Image (cartoon, rainbow, N blue to C red; front, side, top):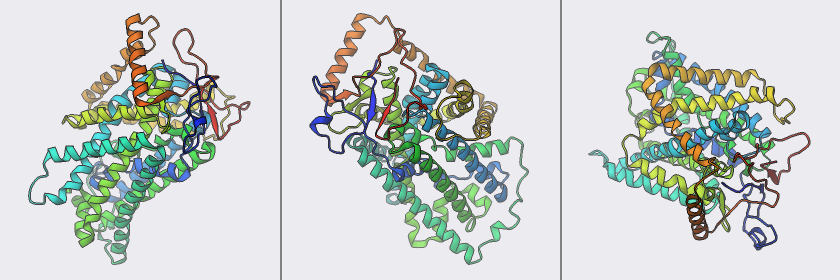
Length: 522
């Protein structure tokens, strides 16, 4: 469906040479705008959401209320997430294409599982998470204005909708603006957590260590509890794979992609551990479990007049995660359309702004629609197991491709034991979800399979003439209105006669990487 071609560097301010020529073959191109610091802030800003502020108690609850066991679980979850992240480093530097796990599933297992992952991301999971994060931010922003009564839900939803619209506009207008915004939000949430961590260190220096005595005492730990504790911890670390969706826009990806992932995951792990330690300097394990907003309770007890910092930090954290999701999910949409599985319009770039405007704009109405229903939280629960299933499959492509394509050039190679361990952990997470909530998992799988008829429509060769004419006419009209053009080059290769896009290009020994240009297809 969509045109295919090369992704090359473009200038910050587009010149006449950047625009498509009527006959010369010049093209509009995405630019490598994301440097190492941007990469780190995208990861940190997306991984750290509202959970560490509001309810970091899932790990503690399922660890039998034992502070010591909970801290061990947090540490191991960070290590396991690092295993997954390192696996994606190998994939991201070998398969030089944006799209993240969608691209890796396509490369290893073909278009159907890749499309189902694409479908659940752009239509269900990412917009739903954007809606929930925006609602959380709106609630914390408005809470100080309604101290004597409950915050009105319509006001929260209006503020959440406004936030989604503003972030969508920024991502449509400029990649540089959206990454700068992500930098600000990431620094803001780290500073907010830094206030909590510093306050905790002061508490420890003043002798508030009673909650760390007999740290391994608590209720009996059940065999089911520990896997659920790991499930909660791994969920808190999820997001380490988002930078891989932007590979084609990362400067010098063979250097910056691995460094950004390693630095980002390490920073988050240290912050999570220190923040949990800080909480226990002022709260017992039971108080942490019963608090509706752990960070707010801590701030009220320790920070005094500075307690307002925490609600602001929660709002900033949620906005940052929403912006990071919008930035990454739009690239998955863009790549899926470029591969021919989504409408051509979604693979087009604005001629002046050099942003994938249609792909970014698509997520906005879906997220706004999610705000109108109270079932958005249930939708995320339904699809959590499916999400881990796809992440585990994507990680398993590392040993699979080592076996099927041993000659693939791999600038980074990780010990095979790391992706194998992480894939097995994902399998256990899915199995535990199936055991504890089989109906929810079944609904999630059913929602995922709704993408099958859409996939069949995308690869249908003998579409009716009226449908072809209608879609072509609508695409031309929207293309003219939005001032977008396909990312296309004279060397692009068309689909094969069966309608399946060409195999994704992986780095090879005979094709060294050019840091200013990455060919995405043979």
